[in-house]
Image 1 (cartoon, rainbow, N blue to C red):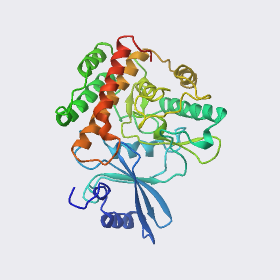
Image 2: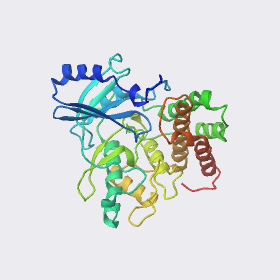
Image 3: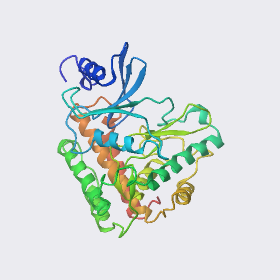
Image 4: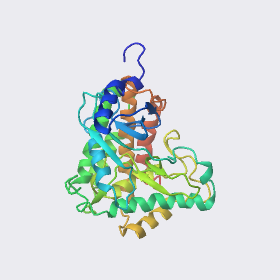
Length: 351
């Protein structure tokens, strides 16, 4: 950053974006931009353009690991899923010209509702509504995994064969990228052992479906009514074709009454009405027709991914590429993640 420049200043050139909006959407008699700071990966900004209320998504400022923040891919998936059983924001436009705001970006219509992060919304704080929040979440994941991806034009989105091996390799590479910056600060226990265990325990076969890649409570939007209704699945930057249980393992990392990262995970899932993991996965099996097997593998893979993602957060903090107040704490949090993964491998902790 230059002197006097904030992180938000790096995210958008307001004059250039105004010119783009005029050329793409027509003139607007009002214009405003607000950086939404709650996310921890791609950046989200609210844009007002005349009568339009838009959401702009772009990668974080600064150097990032290769392929980690593909917003054009994200837009393509959202566009393809419009009109299916998977609710997504209405797509507006995508821009691959990095000269406009310094990166690729896309725009969708803004929806009104609630993103559930670490605290429970007061309007959902009843046993029946807590259960409905949970059912909407898992039923929508089942819808993602049963969508006909060929029919909606996503048949070339990924290669399901070898998907799990590539996931292990990819997240190992992401961790190594971050460690080039973080290794001098402290070490992370068990990370290589976890990677080796995953490589040795890859399931022989699995279903081939659309995979979200980052499916959890704070990547979906619930509508404004008192009765919980999931109205949009967001943050598709890791979307691909592969093993649906990869999403299940990731969700299990976050669906825990004893959250590993309180600033990143729900803190209320032990309250009456929220199903435990077993109940949640039983419903998933009924809704999707997909059997949940080898859950230890998928949950350890989820922790491996979580360690890599959080180590990248820490690297971005050390490089001065983020003002997220959660990132400095990754110094201690990442070793905690790998210790929990090792405990699952050793049978000292159940999923």
